[in-house]
Every structure is written in C-alpha cells, then in structure tokens.
Length: 473
Image 1 (cartoon, rainbow, N blue to C red):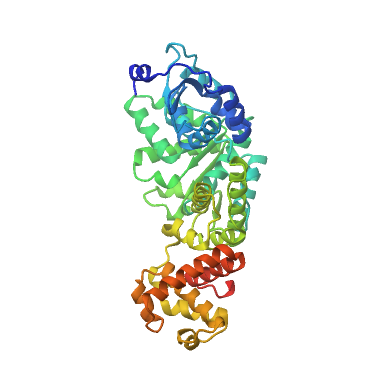
Image 2 (cartoon, rainbow, N blue to C red):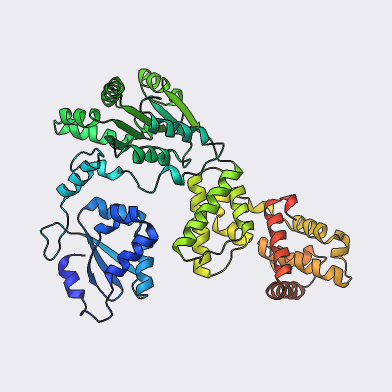
C-alpha cells in the first residue's frame, strides 16, 4: 500500500485513538525487557484506521524479524486496548521520510558494533543476529542433551578448550538454541559472529562477484568466536570450501573458538572435503539424541506455563493431554512446541479444555495414526472389558441397566471414532434399527454434559481405543 492510498484511507483522529505508550508498556511487560529493547522499541506508531493500524520501522530486516516472531502477540496486545483492530501494517520508512524520526541503517550498524556482534554492512548477516530469548537458562535439560549443554557451558567458561565444538542431531533438537546461548553469553566480552552455513556461502559468492574478497576474509577472520549453524549445507562449491578451510585454520591458529552445528556426524557429511571433515572431528563431537519422555513432558509443561503468562491463564489444558502429547510427539522438540501452540490456539478459540479425540484431530498430521486401526470389534472389546461384561451380553436383546449403558457407550464411540453409517453400526450391534443408534448417541451426549465422571470415563475409553494403551483404563 503506497503513501497516497494510506492518505486516502486515513480517518479523522478520534478521541478514543490508541494510547501507544500504554501498548509499549504492555509489550515490555508481556514479552520481556530484552525483546522490547532489542526489537519492539524500534516500532513507531504512524496512524490508526478503521480496522488496522500502521506502524513503521527503519529497516526491512527489523520489519521481517518482528513480523516473523512477534506480530501475532503485538496484535493481541493491541486488540486488548481496541477490539476492532484486526491487523497491523508494518512500513519501512527511511530517516528522511516526512514526520518520521527513525534510526538509519548506519546507526543500526554502529549499535551492533558496540555490542561486539560482527556484521557485514548492508548484507545478510543481520538476518541471523543473536536471539536474546535463546539462552542457557531456558534450555530444558534431559539425558539426551545434557552432555551437549555441559560442553557448551565449558566453551563459555574457557574459550578454545574444546576447539572446534561440533554439535549434531536431528531437526528441531535444540542445536541452534545452544549456539545462540553460547553467542549470547560471550558477546559482551568477545567479538562474536553467528551465521548459518547457507548465508556464509551467499556472502562468499557475493564477495567474489563484487571483487571484495579481502573484506570477506577480514570480516570472518577478525573474530573471537565463530558460530556456524547447519554446516551440512556447505556442500559442493570447492572454491568456497577452500576459503572456509583457510578461515577455519586461521581462527584456530589465533585461539578463536569455532562452534558448529549439523544434522549428522562429521564423517557422514556429503560433498565436504575430507580434510575439512577431519578438522571437524579433531575437536569435541557431541550428538543431541531424541528427547526422552521426561524431557518432552518438561518442554510441554514449560511451554503451556509460558503461554498462560502471556494469555492471562486462558489456556485450558489437562494433565492428561500434557502426558499424551509428551508420549506421542517423539521426533522433534520443534514439533512438540508446535503441537502445544496448536492445542493452545484451540483452547483459546473455542474456550474449552480439549479432549483426547480433539487432540487427534488437531495433531493428525503429527500423530499419523491409521484410520483402519479403529474397528467396531476393537471398540466393543475394549468397552466390554471396561464394564466387565461379555460381548455376547452387550449384543444381546436384554435391556438390563448394567448392559444398556455399556451398549450405548460402544455405539456412541463407534459413531464418533469411525466413518460407519448408522445402518452399518446397527448391523454390527445385532441388527438394531438406526433409530436405536441415534437414541444411544443422544443419550450418551446428554449424560456427558450432566455427569463429569461419566464424561471422564468416555474420554478414557476414547484414549484407549485410539491408541491401544492398556494401562490407561
């Protein structure tokens, strides 16, 4: 949207216009002083329109960083002050734009120079600045990552004690968090450079094209701590690997610390020179394994507590759900946190405590359970075992109370957990009429609302049927 269109849509200033200073205070309280001072303080209020507000920042990088990490939370804070605002537009205004006093790109560069975080002016390095949120204090520990954490802390205490430190593990296991925490701990007293391998390659190619290889070498070799994330992407490109090898050696020779992360061990890296892999292996090589149940539980619990602080305890998630998610999402910590975010959104949007069957729908792509796993025979067997009756008794025509309730429960669970039609369900329950099936479903739904204990029993049964956990009933 250009400035002319903005001016056309601009509304007359109303008496109830947004109090930006109050919103700034709330952002600082809810998101923390570090995040606010590093990023959100750079936001400037420009104007308010019918259903959105226009904010400005001084650089494209700051705009992209805030948009990708904090925009949803900022919008929620603004909506607390004015509900009709449903979106935020972020505009990059240079210092000479009318009525706006923004820091120029050069001032941003000087600020980060003073913080001893290396950069290349007008380049991608600002893309991967150290995140003040990823520190040792909020890195949750378990048997799978304890060694990697301890080694990272040793590096902070004694630079070049382990050199290089090579941390590897699957996607979303916390490697970037550890590298970031090291950089955050060392940046006050050392020149720290934190960059991804892909960005290193980009700058290398750019420096060759612009005939600035001398500057490239100076930037990368004049540092005390070099952290490179996802080194496995530095494959191919022989000339680039040659330069990296000499940079790597130059840093080690002068006692600088090099920390690398990858998704595999050094000897498993593909299309990387053997001498580079050998140098990687010459330091301390540590793997981060998949988190065990206890660590996954701590992560889920911690994330829900964090979200409840921000959303004023609006996230309603039971202990059963926490344990279930911790048990089932095993592959990646990032997936685990993403799962919690989905569940929290569901809880807030629908203002309800999700059940196990809700979770199955919310996380269906992550859980990846087969629909064929749930059969009517399985449902009948589990319900009979739970109520301590035989399947013949359940399917009989007898209408004793101790048989009717289990029968209705099994019918209800068949209806919600399978795609069978009412006539098909009736046939599986001794050729009962479809009206009987409808009555059973409605009866159970009513009882669930009136009787919390019965509702809990239904959820337990659903959990057992969906995931065949014999110890949960």
